[in-house]
Image (cartoon, rainbow, N blue to C red):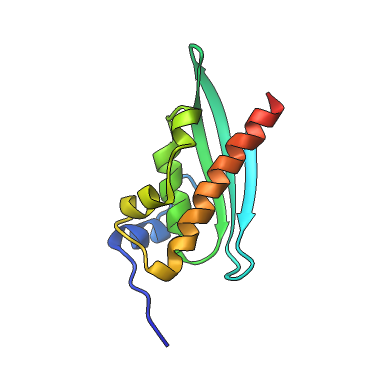
Length: 129
């Protein structure tokens, strides 16, 4: 048996996640999951406009999973909120892990899921516009 060591940031977000919940009438939604570990994330986005630029006015998540899945979902919403769609689409798994103060290597797939969820929600929005 092995133990996982989570950063203080991951543990804080586990206790008090940011932007958890649903957006009523979202502009884009995505559900991603990992059948191996059972983590499932749903991301919701609301898009606003500043002039010609579209930006993420609101980003929320619902996640069923481990502390790393909840932490990566939560921090990703904080990182993406207020960014233009093109800048949000450039957020990387590595940036998510760094913003959390690290993740155990066996939990890096959670950052992959979170980023994939955001990109899929943006893609969902763009299909409807």
